[in-house]
Image (cartoon, rainbow, N blue to C red):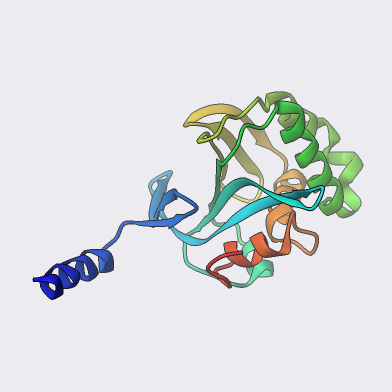
Amino acid sequence: MKKVFLGILLFAGAFSNAAEMYDVKFDDQIKLDGKTLVLNGMGLRDKTILAVSIRVYVGGLYLISPSSDPDAILKSKDPKVVRTQFKRNVKAKDVKNGWKDGLTANCEDTCKALEPTAEKLYQALVDVKEGDVLEYRFKDSSNVEVLLNETSLVKLTDASLVSAMLKTWLGPKPVTEGLKKALLGLSKKN
């Protein structure tokens, strides 16, 4: 009887529609503007404070087709989604400061030019609670919509900002190397 039950569990797992990490489940596929995107990778954003690692969010990267090549993903005009589900409460000022640090590290020679659009992003960000989902829908290489729990916070059009935002996770100076590798599907856990 135990073998039959184990066989049923293994069979059911083979047809799972979701990936799970740290009690966060993300669908294997999502739709964006009628296009199917697949979960490319999933990882943990943690922050070390006074030698203690704190789980901030679990992030997932959705693409039209899987890729482990960050340059190809960054250059692609295809839609992309980065979904982040928070593992703790985070104040709006801390979310904003995280974005300011990430964009500053990744904006290259366009920092000054993207300031007005980045300011709109910062103004739209709010406190997030444990379990909240902040989602970044990159519709193409110039447009991004930021949503909190499926409610739109802001829509932005700025190719430099979109590039810098994506580089925050996938570029040469990502928020963490472990999260970058996980989003690229290069590691199961980070």
